[in-house]
Length: 331
Image 1 (tube, rainbow, N blue to C red):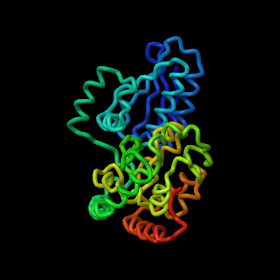
Image 2: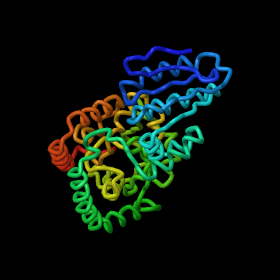
Image 3: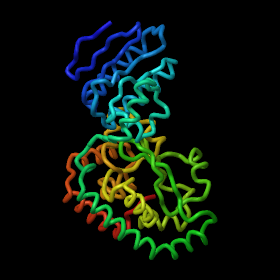
Image 4: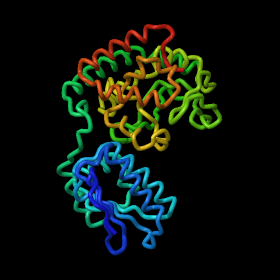
């Protein structure tokens, strides 16, 4: 059982009657569709061994689309009760899986796992999926902006905290798990704008958006003070802490929730190639009116394509202008 090398150099062979899919040197969006079709074909065949090996021996670079394709095929394999085993991971690839926490759910050959984990700790070579990821100037702007933002947050904290407490019992801050660069989970902070059991009640609220997002213009979970905070984006001030820590950037893509990411098709994982931002294309293009997930994808990919330091600065100024517009803000 073998297939000739394709344009993306993905080969299928067999080892002890176990299908082996050898990935190319670079495992990115251009390779993931072929990889998905190959895996689907293998998973649809009778597999007496109940196992498929994904060979990473040649792979030195993987981006968020590559990660997405692994996760997608892992779900399908588990549904068919077939084990998906990752083999011969380089330190670079292992570092990515460690960053995203996928080492906890992926099956990695033990001998290779032990060796590569040691290498990953010493080398920690993470891929540069987008120029903005390695920009020291962008990071400097983030740090300076975050410090200024946290000073403003500290000044406004007492009145905001008082109004939140008077309006609705519960904590002042709300922390929610979001997915950052390459799908890495982090806790994003906000001033609480909903009732305390908002997450529990979410399933009872109608979703007015299309695709892997959730929106409701008249969400009953939002408090009176919360609506004001959202309209002026004051609820997002604590996110300057996330920017200072490096989980987010001042400007980037919209930070999705894990349940949203679970619904992604492989190409949609591209939006995770950059850090999520407090603002971005979606913010300055009517975020409260955007109810189609495909529009968010389009805006996020537009940001990645057009990114430059000056582009970030322009989006920051546009965001400030939007915030002074009475009709702007989230719902």
